[in-house]
Every structure is written in C-alpha cells, then in structure tokens.
Image 1 (cartoon, rainbow, N blue to C red):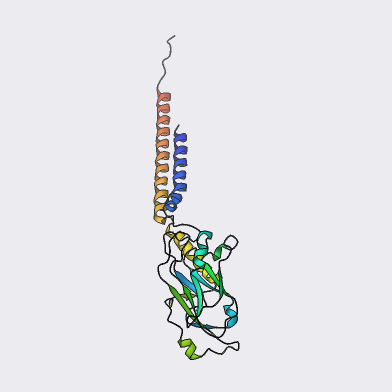
Image 2 (cartoon, rainbow, N blue to C red):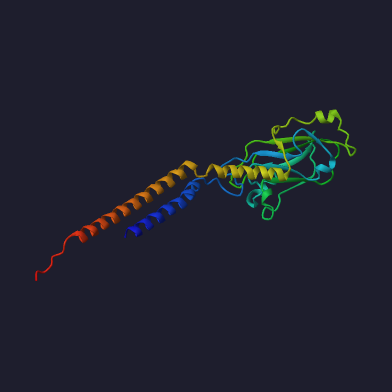
Length: 247
C-alpha cells in the first residue's frame, strides 16, 4: 500500500513539473506570424536608407521594412497603395509596389518592395509611406514617413549639390539600413527575446524540485518507520513464550 502511495505521489509531482512550463507560456500570448500582438506597425529599415547616395543599379528593387507583418493577404493591397516614389520636386515616379509570397518566404512578411518601371536617373528622390499602413493584427500607423536618397550617375559621380539640397528632410531619419537577410535575423532575434521573457524562472523550478524531494523523502521515512514497527511487533511476538500442554 505504501509503495503504491509513493508511486502515485511521484507521478503527480512529475505531471506538475511537466505542466509548469506550459502554464508559464500560456499567459505570454504575444501573437504569431509577426502580427506583433497589439503593437503599431512602425518603419524600422529601408533600402536605400535615408540620406544616402546610391548607384542606379541598386535602385532596381527597393524596400521598406516594418516591425509587424504588413504583407498578409488581408492587408497587403491597402498597404501597397500607401507607398510612392517621387523626385525631390514632387514629380511622381512610375513604380510597382508589391509583397513577397509569404507562404514560400515567410521571413519577408514585414517587407513592402518598390520596383521602378525604368532605371532611376541621377538626382534626388523621396519614398513616401503614408499613414494607415496596417499590420496583420489590424492596427494601423498614424503618421507619414519619408525616406530621402540620391542616385549618382552611371560613372559613380555624385548628383549636383543643388539637386541633393532640394531633397526634403525625412521624418524617418532614425530608420536603420539593413539587408533583407539581416533584418529578418533581427526580427527573429526579437521574437526569440519575446519568447525568453515567458520562460519559467529558474527559482520556480528549483522550488518545485525541492518540494518534490521533500515529499518523496517524507514518504520513504514513513514507509521505513512502518516497516520497522512491523519488524518490532514480529520480534516481540516471537519472544513471547507459548503455552504448552502439561503432560
């Protein structure tokens, strides 16, 4: 009977240990698929980056990256309409704005791509990201963002200083430059950090293990005490003289 109780106690403790991590993570629901939970989508990187001078070839495919999933099928079309490219004087540039296939390239779900219809001529340009960029979580940005850059000529010579000076100041001056691969790695790192925040504290695990050890030790002591008591009773019974019939 005691052995069965100890076995049941051990099973219960093991189940508690297995459920502890799950219980800790259950309350950490911050969303999935880079929806960003309840976070507002913000511009975090671009190519070209704000204030830089680039070659014409490097502008064949440009992109802007956000903190949340903005390429979800339910929001992608609306987000595409909010991206435009102009000369520094405001003249529109014909571009194709698109998103990657997030089913085959899930690491690109935070990107909106910009592809000019023709190679950009030397001069100053502005990428405008209008307010209302909506993430998968349904939350939209509230402010416009701009990224200014200059295209050098084919020989690599800088554009005229007058043209460069005409570029409006960008509200995205703090946007960092990153390649799609490095930006995806940064997003992954953020996801990993968020995951670590929900990890079970080491102290909690130690406490559970100590309690389990104390319970098992107490059960074993109780069993030993009971066995010793039985042995003592058996010894006393053997020592008692038995009645013999007189002849």
